[in-house]
Image 1 (tube, protein in one colour):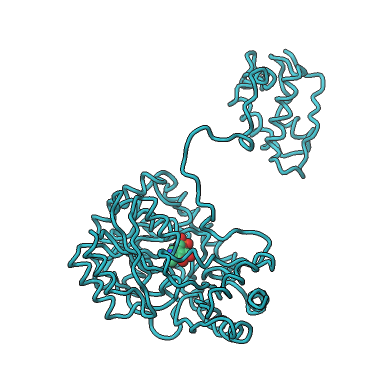
Image 2 (image 1 turned 180 degrees about the vertical axis):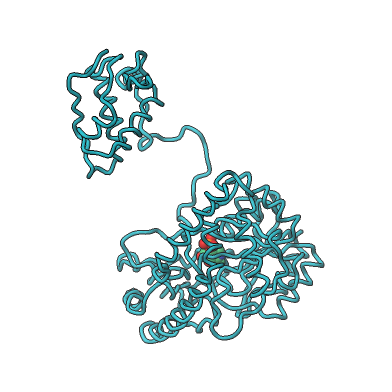
Length: 489
Ligand SMILES: Cc1ncc(COP(=O)(O)O)c(C=O)c1O
């Protein structure tokens, strides 16, 4: 029986970023390749190896198991673990094949649709970001989230729910979302009407994939949410821009476009128009529904930040009084945390069944653990508690932001205090001022969404959408001071 006279594995360090067991795996492969561990040689027992390396025995067991699975070692029962007679192809043999370029240098030799020159998402980096209305993720207690995840994981194990599941998402969360929509937003829904999505963005894309055939006309407002337009276009929609004013979408123009095109759908954010923040007037909502009946188009209602309405009770979603005409999309991103990636679609069951099929094609199903953690947060009352807390915080930040805007930028920008939502819409007397400000912002270390990103027609007015919720008052002043400097330049 061959035993190594002394096996020394150097370089195994707890401080390395590579897991210890992988370091042992690499070390042993190196010893075998060098020939110091010959086929047929017995390795030290896991206990002896663990002692000599100063690591936990389980770590060595894991490393041996990995090497057995790869074919480097063979387990011989009670006699121990031995270097395999026939070794896997070694690195040195592989090196004789001409090396392929690394993925970092490789260029695809196939054609594909390149991404747009300006990415849709604001870049991340070491600068102040004035977002388009994100929440302040620092306000959600990490401990509460950890507890919800722990409980979700334990429950999933107990109930054996870690396999492939329903593409509509966790039954638990669908129940909770349906109850919330019924009791707080007047939607007559059950869990069968709900499909959980990865944020409302994936909801919009999934709806587009399910609803739109290439060439279908979809109406969008002349200023709207760019990522929604991109998702609709990616599914083949022919985008037609309709006018917008201070009361929301221009329904006369919607009718005009319906007479000119066969319209399949309209995408709207009626509660808080993106980017201008205005709520769509009730009379216009009713007119839209009449037009939807007359011309047979669907209304995609994106209600991305429903909870945050500061001046009055929020208007009920259009889906609450026209469930068969409206496909409703919501999200926990603004209320809880964008990183959870939880959104939902609420629609009649046959459409949700079709949506579920689309989900199966994209990612099979949602993230059970996160969805159940979110359900836990709703069930335990934590979500409601958080909603109450952040509502107060954001209400105060909204007022302070408005004051700072007037003080620092009042001579350059026009704005109206938004009744709801987490952002202000700033317009400029002179477009040249806006152009200058946007050109200077990067050098001042501030990023805002490009004013052109909201426009779907050349004649659309331009402005900036600036979120107020994610920054503390002092942080917001720093950012607004930079905006003011850029404006004065
Ligand atoms: C109007 C609108 N719709 C949808 C989204 C997407 O949000 P999420 O995918 O995080 O739910 C956003 C994000 O800011 C938004 O502003």
